[in-house]
Length: 517
Image 1 (cartoon, rainbow, N blue to C red):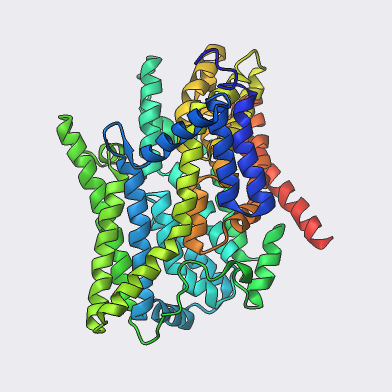
Image 2: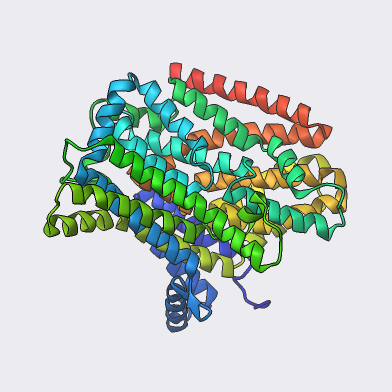
């Protein structure tokens, strides 16, 4: 593999770039991802069509069955999506969605209050980004629809609160994963004087992208900050057009929705899903600790938890609670089948995109695109530029590969090697820059699973979400680079944060001038 002409070379960038550019230009996500997959397979097998097809078939098979066993993570995520689709459809059929929208409309008096509700729910569902995007989208969509808030705006609020909160919170699936990586890095360099948790919290304070993205969300909720294409979507939503008419009815909007349901059905279903999922996260983590002979701790449990299995358990609980509501309504067998079929059908577009995204991500990993990007900066660099360059590199890697977690896994050890070789004082700033850049790239990437599921939760056309979120993400990237440059020059968190804050004000000023013009 070392003599392979395309692996870990500039050629490895072509498949993700092709898929991303075509997806944005043509708005045909599956076709674009499919062409990227074909090109990646051909590059990997040096343009031998039969061998490339065979390898590609094996990659698709491995999505479901890998190393002699079920690919539990992938299968569980797909099962959770199907279960959530059934929950949405059942709640709609029972009238609970309609009842909740009427209940909220009687209490939520403005578009701003509807957006505030959406933003605040991140602090209830912060445990996992998938869980947040899908659950909050299900709860808030009927309310945001009633107040003429576009599906693109809802998707933005979901996506721009999910990852930034998860990457800052130690008690989340993201936090636990990153803390585990940091622990290994600190141990490898013999840095036993600082705990991984303390290092994570310090890095969180340096994560300018996550912090200022959340501040931008607050401004968007307050109103008046519809940047770029978002303004057009908001105007159309106020005119009653919540989604593109030529794209058909999006998932979650069904012709069998009825009135006269109960708000309690929705609250019990989402509450049951949430509580059982949280219990599953702690239970599976506790089991892993017990099997390893370690004492129980909440953070330790979250470091070792099985997220996919917990989500499926919560989904089953939600379906059973919804089933009780339909039993009370004396739903016929024919209606039962129709309701479940509608729910499954509504989730199929998201599942297709996710399968394609997983496939191209696997092929990109084999082409070692991430390692190639990392190698571009592994040379003599001015120390003060290092955090900013690591931010940009992590952003490009997450954008090209569609995975922030994969970027964490590749880039955090590289950032540690680079900073420790130059100046150990830059270890935490360098790794914080990687964390920030990975979230930025994830927000911009059409092949990111988090972006896909935020679109799904909002029932928004996927490319509409990508295009409307891009101006916000790029603006906050400029703010972050400003902060990381100052942090690199001064070595002071306070100076870096002050520079980022000044950059934030300047960016807002530029956007205000553009809006007036």
